[in-house]
Image (cartoon, rainbow, N blue to C red):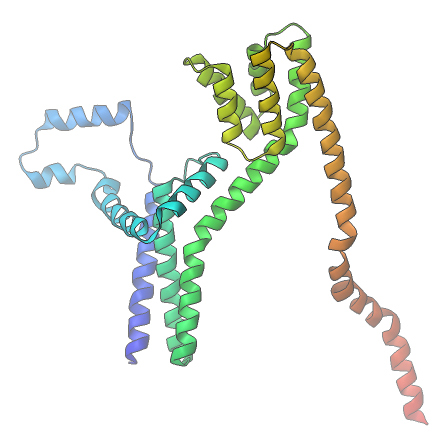
Length: 312
């Protein structure tokens, strides 16, 4: 057997095994809080007779998956600059810190996907008998693609969340304005909006209320809200509310102005999106619709003309 083919097959096998173990680690739910404490007390009462029995009593995720993921995460941290680590963490914050994603998991997925795609590319190049220079380029591209795919996923999650916040903001401000004008305080109005909003904006407002309940001042909690998102409209609302709180301006008037501006901006974004539609459909129309239309309309006439000229 070709040594390159053998090496590629071995790397693909190891890559698939590592990916399967990583997926299993993502699916396994670790015990935490009271259940884990009770399990620890049970282990102390059981008093295993040997170190082997004590290790076998631990879950599979702690005995096998945790050391493997720790090693992969350490490799990912060594290969990633500190500035890029900060950018990844910022993207995770913008994405709302999904439960299945954290910095260590993103770094581990980078290493695993780069290894798996690089192994697959090596195997394909070995089977197809690609030249060494071309095979090197293909493998480098595959490894780079596997390295950037987790970051692209996080970027897409952050973008979708920001778009959802931008869509929900005008309606939330309308509800907030109505609640304040009906006699509720600002904090109670925020709670009302968070209860009636199921999207990411409602979650962020709930977090603002929780921060204020544990002792954080309202301006600081609102500034933190603006820092956790990259939506300009939300940041302008936060800035206006902080200034109103600092100077003692009535909140109802500020909210009314902010709600009117958000509705205006939403209308402007809708008009802008409508104006971009003709440009977006131009290329599909030219390369997809018009050729088929020409075949349907001109095709029968061309066939008849061909038959007529052939009879002459």
